[in-house]
Figure 1 (cartoon, helix red, strand yellow):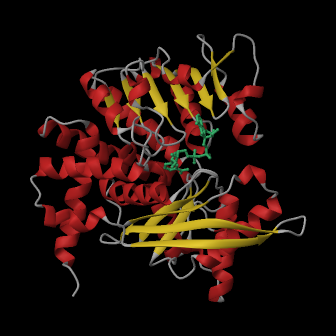
Figure 2 (cartoon, protein in one colour):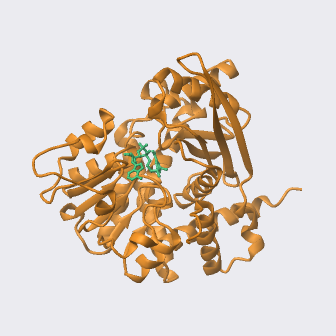
Figure 3 (tube, protein in one colour):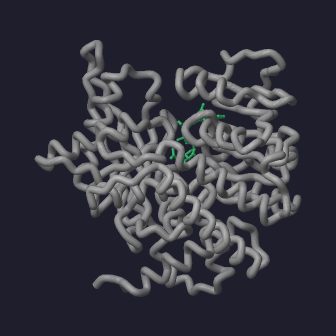
Length: 419
Ligand code: NAD
């Protein structure tokens, strides 16, 4: 029987390989194998029926070598500490790849946000914020949205933290609604970053993105936005999947309509119907006959079990950790290009950084400015990763990890080990 998938082991495996290619001594990156802090909290909440439920929550800070820790909060019933540790480490690497002055962190609450009422969700979010209060702050650790969390919830986090401080602190969390210090462009930033990355990849290979056939897994913030932006780019989005399964239409799906159905109206794909649309399994979407596949749901989706059947020659990872180490090796042998998560989905944290910069300086930038700066950062990061990978005859994943690792190790060396 195959060993249970452990995303933290997955992260370490790639880190070791990248370190080996850079010729780093183990002592150079030893500290990066361990999170700086792991906090587990109990979140007691009074439910609408008067009963008390206690939810489990986490906040993990992986590295603060390059700046305050930064990372989203996941609300998901199956989340565990290994997943949060891996996600925190990927945040350190991600911030380093795009060269923004942050370290990495991640948080989570073990709950299905759709299974509780809005009032219950607000009480869970606020109590969780109070529980992790000693760790967070605009100079220490800045949360943001992730799977299952929304801008509205970020507003509750900002308010709860501010109440404890006695004054309004917008810079404690990013991904907030615009009315309380959110940045224009943040809502679409991760998907927009995926689009910029796909553009760079296609351009490097002499291909035209605007004529590409595309499949996207995930109809949430990242998948839904990516699908819309790719459709607006001219791509034919032929296959989409969410947790309930997939839909396929050879002539191209009506992405705007599906986005409205799934993301805005909070329905699932299994209840979406339109002429020419065929319902299928999520696996069929991942294996669809397309030029570009964007896994944008969860980790551990492209496994060894499915890799040989994946037909897309180009994969851009909207989700964190969607490809296992084994599947990655199979893709490399098949000659596929995989733009790794820590580069491809970094648009969200880049605009989170812009939001934080605006908050702490009381500035307000327009959307054009934000999108323009995001494009510049993503293009520069892509070029650095592409060049590094080619210089070492390595995959883009190893290229990205090498770029990140060099920056993290440099910062660690400059700062030294205390005492
Ligand atoms: P979300 O909660 O908005 O959406 C998740 C989507 O994935 C939903 O459509 C859900 O139905 C689908 N899904 C869940 N399990 C599935 C399964 N087994 N098969 C197919 N579909 C499934 O989450 P999101 O914010 O879009 O995040 C998606 C991924 O992108 C995560 O890996 C997250 O860590 C990563 N990410 C998010 C951001 C961000 O800004 N939101 C930034 C960087 C990376």
